[in-house]
Image (tube, rainbow, N blue to C red; front, side, top):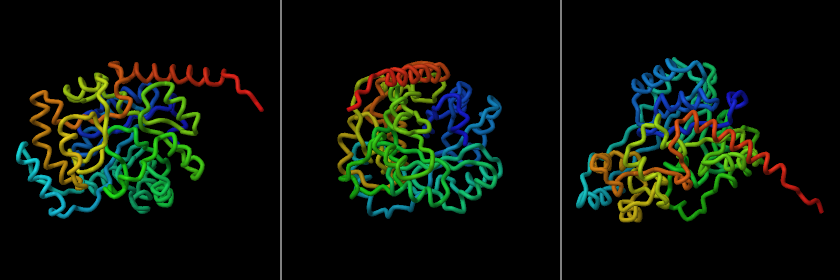
Length: 348
């Protein structure tokens, strides 16, 4: 397993939509962690170009993350919401696509990488077997024990346990508004459940931004941690300036479907407050429809109409080169683990 060979048990989260770059992946990998390239929203051609650029800069193994496509949403479920937005914002075409799923899978079978990870669902057993046949590990992001069982049954090698604290989209296999009333699991709760009920290595992700947080996840049984938000202010990240500046504030986060039609955590802003209550579950249709208004807001430096994805500990993200950040986190993790072990435990 790739995880067993890491010098530092830190996996770079695949942050699609801009922040993920070959430079960031290489920096984390060269510092002893494991880098995942985000292929979400990219064509197979552009994904291949990023793989080539990463390979040109490092001999170390790395991975690629894919979005598992879901079904199209009937237009009558989101037409009213788009009409609401169009009264005050520029709205584009609501369209459905599979994010070039088949072509990207074919690419990764023809030109394998060490790991292919998945978000928004689990590939079929046959698709995972294809990747295994060319030497790639399959990592599946899950948010519940039920999703973990599906992933294990289909042959997943590693489970990425995403807690509700995580920034960006919830990785749920199916995004159902009727499930919103169910209390979502925090990363430590989910981690304990999965390590007690499966035999797969578990990578913990969600709200982890410090060495102490990493130490807590490792002590609870994680084989490694996956970090995203903490890397958003690194110079190697492709984070938009509006997003980068907002991360340094203490603005609270919230979950919303307002920007993309799929539940995601970001910094609370005016658009989220005004439209979250009426936003339907319609991904990727709403994602495409709101693209123009988000682009206009970024160009204008307007943080109130941009999806500022961030985890709950975003204010702890430092402005450091990624390699230095990995080394700092590794040292802080060791210190936190040593401090925990040094505490005296009274035996009754």
